[in-house]
Amino acid sequence: MGKEIVALVDCNSFYASCEEVFNPDIIDKPVGILSNNDGIIVALSKNLKKLGVTRGTPIFKINKHLIRKNDIRIFSSNYALYGDMSARVMDTLSIFTPELEIYSIDEAFLSLKGFEYKDLTQYGREIKETVKKHVGLPVSVGIGPTKTLAKIANHFAKKHNFAEGVFDITDHPDHDKILRWTQVENIWGIGRQYAKMLRRNGITNAFEFTQAPDKWIQKKMTIVGLRTVKELRGISCLDLEKDIKPKKEIVSSKSFGNPVTDLQNLLEATSDYCTTAVKKLRSENQVASLVIVFLSTNRFKNEPQYANYAKVRLPLPSGYTPDFIHAANKILKRIYRPGYKYKKVGVMLADIIHQSKAPLDLFQPTYLDDDRKIIMDCMDDINEKMGSHKITYASSGIKKTWQMRREQLTPSYTTSWQHIPVVKAI
Ligand SMILES: [Mg+2]
Image (cartoon, rainbow, N blue to C red; front, side, top):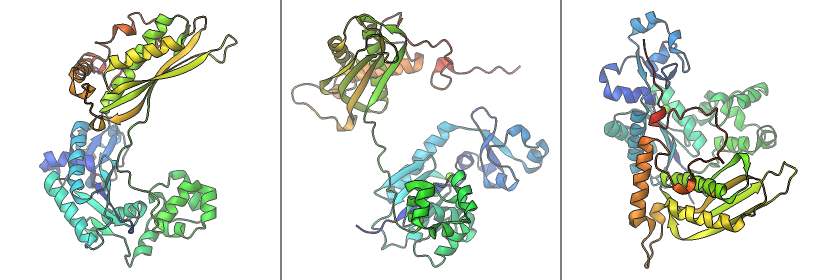
């Protein structure tokens, strides 16, 4: 195992830069991006920052005269555009490393382990130039032996013109000076409260922090703080998170508004929760092979108590809702006991794997290569376009008397075409 070397690549003023790609005439202008409903400034270009505007400023508080005089350009946020540009940046970055961690919409960590033979500053410049050429966006590159130091190197690269957007802090003669320049508030992972606490104790910058005794740090800031300080000292404690870990289980379960006693209602609820859980499974391109159903009475009530669960394994991993409803109903019939007031029933899917890893079977078609997948995709499409419960299963019932009380439920403003807010300007 060699030493860790990490590069943090971060897009400069990401949202504003995305707009600039498509509106080249605004490149040198002060640019601001508004929040979802155009209320406050959520992102701004360097030139707008220079005018003293900060993130979170309500648009109405910016002087009209200032806007006119400086030709400030204001945009609504276009998340479809930013998301797509982000994907292109990440694609380009993946050329430069076998291990990439997408940290946020505009930042990624690249492992450069084993690349030490290269001039890494030069390599960083190559990354920067390639992203500019492929996607049109400016980035800064910080390189260091740990993620926390790479963050600092990146911050330094952004703030100092001579670095031209790329800085490698590893074994740099000014290493300690740069840590002294880094205020505690700007250390990755140090929140505002901890920064205040450190200042109260006379620690104002990253260098001073590295000199604090481990015991004291652990006592004041737990193991998390200790990890940060070790990272600042050049000992890698935070690995790259390369794969977003697939969910181990998906649970769908709700407490009933009124207790439910009869099997039919419980079957309907189970079927409904199955539908929700399996839809979630498909939306993440996964399949599952284990179904668990649980039910229970209200243990806070002074009445006869019963709780139980059981599981069924499907012959092959599936994403086909009826496979799961069938299995879940079978389980429920097995564990149901009459004469109790049930408070809750739930469905859990487990043994979840990505569709691409699903095993093939010699003797029967799998969910992924027969009509079941086509039917599900079709149903998901229709429900997405027409409203989330347009097509559903008869087994979930029609009246759904078991449903939660949701008289105060607000519309799904952002996830349903039906609920999209309508604004009238008079
Ligand atoms: Mg950024």
